[in-house]
Image (cartoon, rainbow over all chains, first blue to last red; front, side, top):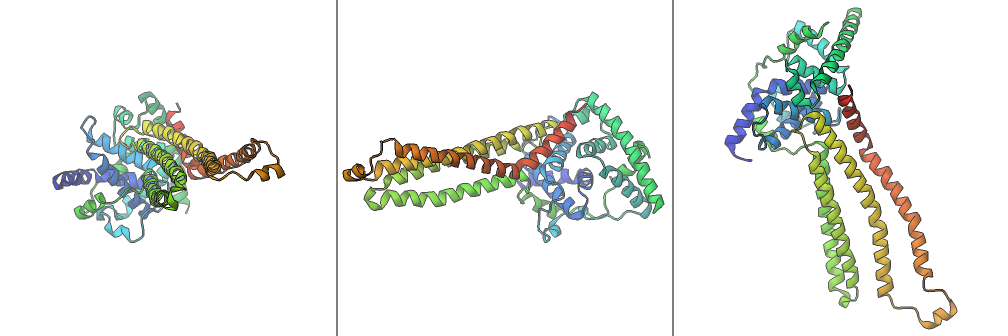
Length: 173
Length: 209
């Protein structure tokens, strides 16, 4: 699939959804090099599967499936896979973004809380925060809607406790 | 903090960074090879297959063309082994291809990976263990068939029944095969054990009510 028009269309789609890809990378990797590895792997997997995308599912559903499958089982956790000279080749938008101090603090709080969740819980939380319906979540994750609701309630409770603990921890230090 | 209030922070991440997306860098990514574990396993397998061809083909040709054809049986043995290895590699390659199912829902993708990886390791263990006694027996058969029989006076000096020698080699083969089985099992577990366990745990977590 070397057709430049197809490549351009693909890159346009990736760019449109780069916010989501970036979030997956932030969620599953704690260091910048690991995030870059994961981003690279997700884009490669998306590109390899692009020819088989027939529009049976929504593009975002297809994208989430590939991104989460790659993040959850495709890469071994926190393993550097590309050489230190490679990051220069990566898209600039993935490099660290500086937010205002207040927002940065909130983000740190959010990530500190999510970091303590399991890989499956992270996926569920991400879809929930992205306002996905339970039907869409089912299509992406393959878990029944009833089971998703049960899990989501548990996660909400877990996150409530974690954020309380994290906030308390921040306040103390 | 409630999950609902985290939504506000989460959506603020949607704001695109000020910098323009780098199309060139994304385009360069499309040319890169996957660094995922399955892709690397597939590449290693192709490398092993090429190494097999590079080492076996000259061996087969050498024993076939040299020594006035007296050792052609060895070239047949090598060709048979190469064929067995080819079957072994192609089966492993097919299983690895099955394992790459990133477009399926996460749960079915995990289930498929666990099932295929288990099949892969079972096949690895059985074929990796079985090929040793098979080679051993074939080599023994060729030696018996090709080597000239000892002179008759030797039999008179050392009277042994006809079955003694094959029985001795067969008995020797049993501990060797068992040893190889355990070494293979240990090695396969070292290579894939943790990965299978992690995938199973993820799957269990997804399926748990």
